[in-house]
Image (cartoon, rainbow, N blue to C red; front, side, top):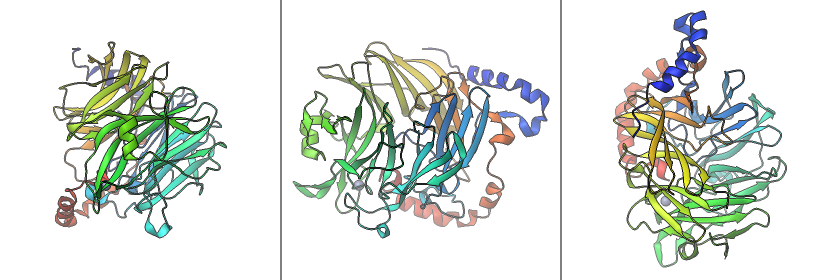
Amino acid sequence: MAPPRSVAPRRRFVLGFFLVAALAPAAETGPVDYFADNGYGNTVSTLHHPAAEHRDGVTYVAYSGPHEDPYVAAYDHRAGRWHGPFQAGVNPMGKTPDQIDPGELDNHGRPALIVDRQGYVHVVFGGHGGDAALGRNEFGLPGKGRQIHAVTRRPGDISVWEVRDNISPFGTYGQWVLQDDGTLYLFYRHGSHRGDWVYQKSTDDGRTFAPPVPVLRSRPDPARPAMHDSWYAWFDRGLGATITASYVYHPCANPGHTAQRRNTYYMQLDGRDGTWTDVRGGKLAVPLTKADADARTLIVATGDEKSNHGSCHVDAAGNPHIFFRFAGGQMRYVRWDGTAWQGPRPVAAGYGRGSDGDFAVAAPTSVRAWLAQSRDGNGEVNVWETDDGGAAWRKTDTLFVLPAHGLEATTLVRNAHPDARMLVGSQAHESEHLYRRMYLIGDRGPIGRPAAEASHLGDRLERIKALRTGRPKAEAKKKKRAAVPDEER
Ligand code: ZN
């Protein structure tokens, strides 16, 4: 195993700012390795994706900031300069004043970001199934908030945003898929934890969208009325016009809710004609039911072990490679070799306390993963590689270490520049507030900026101190909620 390289990337980073630091007053402009300090709550996830995209020398990133509102920043690789973050909209689930109890946040309305053919930047955010007051949801349970689509007024300029009222408000976990011909898909769960997964399709760069098309059915289990079939799904580009769907089953109590997730599944959409097939190419009837999912699309039955979604990428033959997370956040990898599923194999087995992240497929048996990991109380972003189809994984680099914190991962930056692979947010083990630092990590470590530029909190932390008298009440509420973490719904 390679020796720890926690120091080297930061040294490279500090050298990059040496000249700037030497010419300016150190206290105000000394370099920091984060680009913003106003991430708020659970700032990012791998389910809301992409969280970032590189286009024409600029990497755009999106995360939850103050009031759980979507914030977007951009890094110009040629100029070596950050722009923003700018607020891209207002999350209807946000609370005022700033909260200090994580149980007060919803987190489902985190932004996903895409850049269309013309360079306009789009975000979707703000929904957790949609408030019942919005009307009838024909595909699921009402929830909270409102799914909102916002777009920059000008291409490439993230300073001014406009809301486009052209998608269903009943969404959560928004996921953009942009195909090579410019066709833009928005996938999401159409409701709270019991809702069909659907997509809406746009062929005019997000100006208009076709109505939602359900693809995974949420409904009472015909055999067990006290159980409700539901899903957590992850969609992305496959080969050509194909879109991949990897998903896990959520057996939800009816009424109520559970935190259970089971099994792993795969299917794919042919974007040319809208048909869904299993991994062998056999046609599926959609929206897919639990019975059909089990019979036709199951990869692994996990029994009583919890499974969680990961990401999916295809190789040059179009065969899917998939990450899932199993109990304790341990990453597992499976791949379709054209005939059968190989795996699941553990990735980074025995390393630290759980991983999340993403990967890229170089060849059918050669895969590189970027994982945010927790080890010895520190957050790390490590690179792991396999050259034998996943049987053995080795850690080949450490790109970032954040002492005494956890890290929240995103999927890889879309069309990533090597200097900017993954957006991550810090997670405090103990904290007096919910503000988090945001990092953009690449092959040379984090892309930081002068401290004064990275500071966006103003006097918020001072104002939060006044809230602490309410802490005991908030703690009690948090404990009550802990039975079913909000994150799980
Ligand atoms: Zn549920």
